[in-house]
Structure formats: structure tokens, C-alpha cells
Length: 600
Image (cartoon, rainbow, N blue to C red; front, side, top):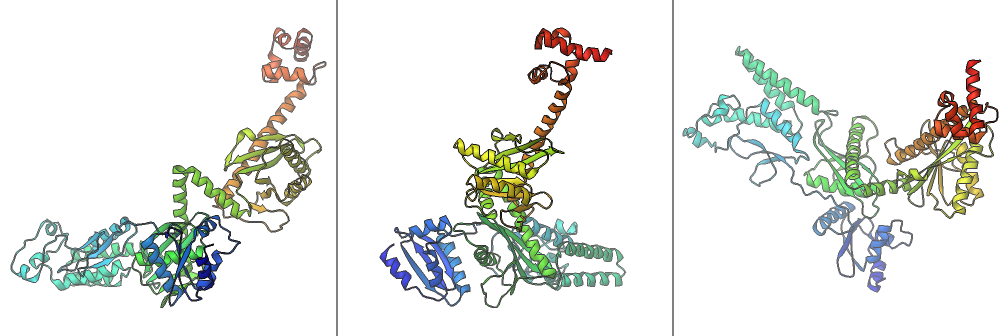
């Protein structure tokens, strides 16, 4: 270790702050934040570091710098800014530099309302940004159907209107505009519409609804029933839009919601902005893991980054789990019940669906990366010392103890390796005894692999519960392999995963890819075993009829079936055909046996 770095580690402050790691070429490797700088930084130089990527980075650290700040939240803000500015190699980042659309209410007389990706500091109001353009367009189209807003870019100043500079255009004649350019619509009336629209964009429909009701009442009082009906249709349209976009209690107002899910390589974070019970913004992003970051660390980083991106100053944030972070004047809430709990669950569902979409794309574009991710996930969930690149699955098949077979299927990198499949016929077990059969087959399989110096699997999957698993474990212990190979059982009823010497089963998420791989291994071993069991039973039935022929042994029967394929064709064959296959003496015996039976 660099002597200067060693000295720095001894003199670290204990306050909140930001630390920066540099390599010997003075390149910034990593920026981190800490509530307690000394404890956090020293943890990197612990000999028991779990992640290999972290160990690689620590090996490159030549010097470090620290900056003390008043609070952990200030440290998070400074860390976020430094990451965006310097983009260190070992930091996670929201790699999303797209320009998002905004709804703009232009700062002008008789304001226009339109979508834009560019914000100009001219006093105009900007609402958004919207993560997807379609919801913004739907909202804007709804507003334009309800209200008649001008779309021209004329300078409608009072002086120019009074001077008669403009004439109404086609938009007026097709009733999309009420003609403010010729003073056919007063500025006060137009501004009332803009105020109502502003509320709709924010998710507050009360002002808009009241404005329309007033309009409808006014027309009705003047006996203008056609216009009153037109406004009534607009109220219905507004209520329909509100119904579709109100997802929680309307009293939940000005709230940020975050949900997330993660795997071994990435985290997926969803963000909702809630106004008056409506989701007015939704955004989901993927964050690649670099140094085995925890979900808590990633969510803290994502919250700050996303709130900055969407200019949110909400004083309440709903999150799926507790964080140590404290944000000044903001409540971080983990809801337990009710509407707030449901909206967090909806956010988490969006994050999970986004992950599934991403993984499907990766599976097509980069199958190797997809496989690596699944292997890493399986290693973690099944508590394995290494990834299960080689899996072997076992299943017993018999009906009332007859013609028993045991199937062994092999999966490599999560895919079947059919050339390595094996079928075992129990030699020491009589009748239907699954436990004893499993014990024999496991012993025979791995005794042979050891004797032939063949590679052993990292994972053995037994189709069955604790009984079958215990039998398999006995054989591994006899061979000295117990503890060297991970072995588990999978029970069909509730898909419980059993581990040796552990009475409590593991229940994996039904959508977990680890469970899907295990189910596929289990189903394949069952399919392979049943197929061979049926073949053996069928052959046994066929042979039993031919075995009744005096003087015809097993080899003669097998020769007949290999040539003629079925007992029916043996029966129908001529004496000459049978003599050609078996010779004159045995061929005659077979022909006479079937023909004398039929004639008799």
C-alpha cells in the first residue's frame, strides 16, 4: 500500500462527507458518500471484502480525497454532482441523456399550449418532463377537445388586435378556436380556460370542471340547449379522462413514489409523480451494478437523480423499504396498508415488468450475458460456493414397482446437454422403493464419474422432498462428496426447495428465473424417465408373448423384433421370412406356434 494512502487512512474524519479514490495515474476511480467517513472508507480495506469487483478497484487505489459536508443528504447531493461531472469508472449512473418532452404554456397574450423538448427562460410555464411522449400527447389532445385554444403564433397584443391587424382563420371556421385575434373572445374568458387547463395538467380537475359547469348553466339559462349539450359532452369527456388516470385516493396529493427490483447485475427503479390521486409522471430506468451495491445505496442515488431530472420538490416520498437517509423538510414513508401501500406496489410492479422486458431483449441480443446473469442469480439464491454451470437432475419412474427406471439429465449453462443423459435400471432394489432406488442410483452415478475422472456437477437436483434428498445425501457421504457438491430437492406440490439438514424449505418467487431453471431440469428428468419407463414396459409386454414359444430364447426374440418391429408382424410373416431371420428350425417353430393357435 502507498505510504501516503496508509497515513491518510489513519487520519480520516468521522463526519459526513464524500470520498474520492484515484489510481497511480491520478484517474478518478470512484466517488462515494458516507454518514461516517472514517468507518465507510476503512471498510474498503477490510481483508474480508466479498465482491471481486470491489477487490479489483481497491487494488488500484493510490490516494484518496475527502470533503466534509453538514449532513448525509448534502453528501448524497455532492456525490451525485461529482459522478455526473466526472463519470468515474466504478460508479453506477443513470445513463439516460435523452431530451424529454414538456407541456409548455407560453408566456404571451392568449397563451398557446404545446409540446416541446426545449426549455426557454422567457417566463413560460413548463410541466413535466414526461418520460414518454404518448401520455403527454393524450393529455394535450384531451385538453384541446375540451377547450378551444389558439394554435397560431401571431402576436396577439391588445394594440394589434384593436388596430384590426388580423382576421380569423380556418381554425375559427371549423370551431377549433373562438377568434381572440378579432376580439371575438375576451382575454378574461381565455385566461379562465388557461387556469382550468393548468389544473388538469397538475392532476387537479376541480377548477376545470367548475368552469365547464358554469358555461353549461349559462347556455341553458339563455335557452341555448345545443351549446349546453356540447359543454355537457365536454364535462363527460373530462370525467372519463379523470376516471382513467386517477389510480389512488384523490386526497393523495403532491407525492413522489419509488419502487424497485434488482438482480445480481442491475437494479430497476420506477418513479411516479402523484397529484390529486393521478399519476402525472412515470419513469423507469435500469442501473447497472458496479461494486455489488446494495438496494438501499442504489435507491438513495436514484431518488436524488430522478427528483432532479423531473424538478420535483414534493415534501412526501413513498418508498418500498426503510433508508437511513434523511432529506431536509421531506418525509420518507414506507406505507404498510391502504392506498399508499397499493401505489408503492404498483410502482414495484412497473419496475419488475420493465426488468422482464429488458431481460427478454438481452436474451435475444446477448445470450451469453443472459446466461451469466442467471448463473449468478442461482448461485446467490441457492447459497452455492460457485455458479451452477453443470447441473444434474434425477427422477425415479415405476408403476406399482414394475419396470423401474431412474433418469439422470444434464444441463450445462442452463441448457439441456442431451448427449450426457443417462438411464439407470436399479440392481439392488426390489419393488417400488423410491428412497432406496435414489440411494443406489446416486452412488452408481458419482462412483463412476470419480473412477473415470470425469467432471462433477456443481448442483444436483433431486425430484422429491426430504426423503429422497436424504437418501441421495447418504450416497454422497459414502463417496466423500457431501459438502463438495450442492444438492437440493424440489417438491412438486408447492415447489418447495429443500436443503440437507434444514427442515424449513425455501420458497422462490414464482417468476424467478432460478425457479424456472430448476423446474425445467425437474420436468426434463421426469419426461426422460417416463419415456424410457414406458418403452421398457412395452417391450416387456411384447416379449412376454414371444417368450411363450417353446425353444425360442431372448436373443431370438430381440432379433425378430429388431427386424419386424412388432408381434403383429411376426404373426403375419410367412414361414420363409421367419426361417430367413432365425434359421430353418427356429423359424418353423415360430410359424407353427402362431398358425396352429389360429387354426386351432
